[in-house]
Length: 168
Image (cartoon, rainbow, N blue to C red):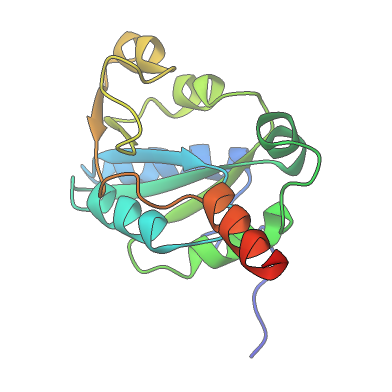
C-alpha cells in the first residue's frame, strides 16, 4: 500500500497552512473544533482513551504533536523515541482523529490562537485550572475540557519499567 505524501490535502497529516484552510472549511459546515496535544512518543492505551474521549466532545478532532526538538526540551536528550512524522502518521491512522499537525513551539498557545478551537482537550494529569494554555483558550472564546482515564500510563514510566525489568 502506498501512502499519500506527508502534506497531501486528501490525508490527515497537514501543514499549519493546510490545517488553517481545513478548519475554515469545517467551520463553514458548522462543525465544532476540538484540539488535543502532546508528545505521543509511544502510543499507548492512555493516549487512545484520551483521544477517544476528546472526539466524543463532538465535531472535528485535531491532534497537535510536539516536534522532535520540543520533545527533547520537554523530556530530555534521549527522547523522542520515534520521529515526529512517524508519530503523526500513527495518530492519523486512528479513526477518532480528523487531522494531525506538528508544532515546534514550546507550547501550543500559538496554534490555539491560529485555530481558535471551540474546545481544548487535556488529559487527566491536569485540572481545568492547571492547563498551561487555559488563558489563551479562554481569550479565543473556547473552553477547556479534561478527558481520558486516570493518568496511569506514561511513556516515561513504560521506559523505566522496561529498563528496570532488563536489569533484573
